[in-house]
Image (cartoon, rainbow, N blue to C red; front, side, top):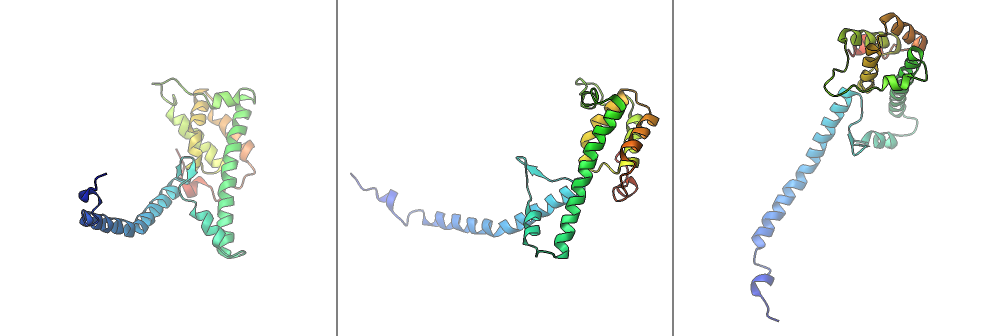
Length: 196
């Protein structure tokens, strides 16, 4: 077997390896700044939309959980974070159940799920009467609190309520019956503004 001097010579191409190492060093030094930028932009996106930024069905940033875990037991900050998360999750559960109950009151429990989830054929508008959609959303938010970004997923349900010809008074009555005792002060549309 012949020995190839060009192939196994350690000094050959050393300058290229040095350049690659310098580039790698520069890139590695940039990573913390890139991560900080990514975290900042993701937090801003999540705050604007009121929901987590998901990547492959997993929250991109779970550092809030890590921050929460690292905080001292019983600290005011830990209690504050837990209270805020709990409040948001309770409001989301309230939105989910309220839409379902309002649909049941208006259409009956047998028909409501299919009516609220009906998807119109391609090319057809989401709703026939956009003023009705705005009115229905405002009626809901007046009684049940702001939809927030999370509740935007129910726009199709509200559009279907309008497409079925439900009157404003019927919607107001259903929302009042379902959410009448809900304390929506923090989630008031006057604080968060109306969604429609």
